[in-house]
Image 1 (cartoon, rainbow, N blue to C red):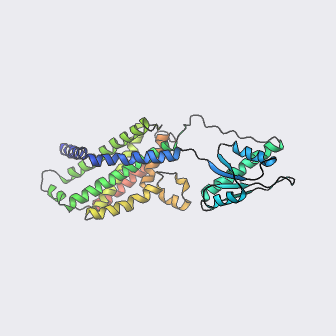
Image 2 (image 1 turned 90 degrees about the vertical axis):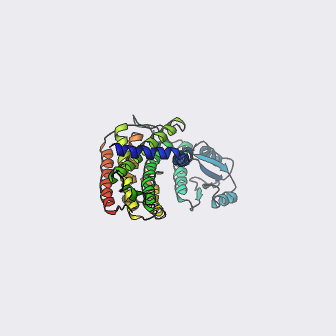
Image 3 (image 1 turned 135 degrees about the horizontal axis):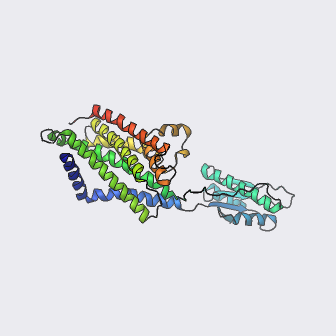
Length: 356
């Protein structure tokens, strides 16, 4: 046990001395939170151009749209409105007809199909607003009025609150993969691991020290990132320590096992880097770190649901957002899935590991 702790302490000391590596380890996740948090928390308005007469009923319609906070309304001539939408400088153009004829009046909503997500938002918002304007202008009383209300006990959250758990899971994956696969492959290539076989230090004690070092560093890194996000970026998250710590540790253990598998296959450090990227990049962008899995196509979502980073992101985000109660069935499911990944990959790593 003392030898294992000695290896762990030595690796931690070497990390502290490498200030450049330490800086970039923390700078990257903080930069992600600042940039994506700012973009996600910025208010969105639909740029709507309106073309039509400036007097009469048409003017009242335009004024009604201008009062809706979701729209940024600007009056333009028909030609200019169509040109700006075609160039992507406006989201949609509402072309109002002359009200000289009796109602109903048929307005034309023109959008740019190059951005279908914004186009769908424009169609939905403009038609929904049109229904409300129709009721207001005809004086009819609505049969049903829906009043949105947050559920009792639910928390108001920002995109930063959504992003922070994903960044923690991403850090756990990146630090574990690069820390183990990169370092062990480099040491194996230089013959350092082979020399350990001739020392009183047992091989398993050394590898255990490496694993313990990665776990300690990962937990300290996560705690520091949470402190920065809460103190300086004003993130609001819950911290149920025991289930959260268990989920994070099992996630790191699964990725450490992947690192050992890669280090066993790769003969040089240069060969290990592409393998790490092939493993980590798909999970980084598909496992729900930056956006919900519901935005993925159903087939792809059913596949990425079983990736280890998906289970880690889901468990950490559910606990930190309050969506999952501590030890809820969903949390237990994520924990058991991460444990299964760890056991499977640990068995594979024992088959692939080589000291030289």
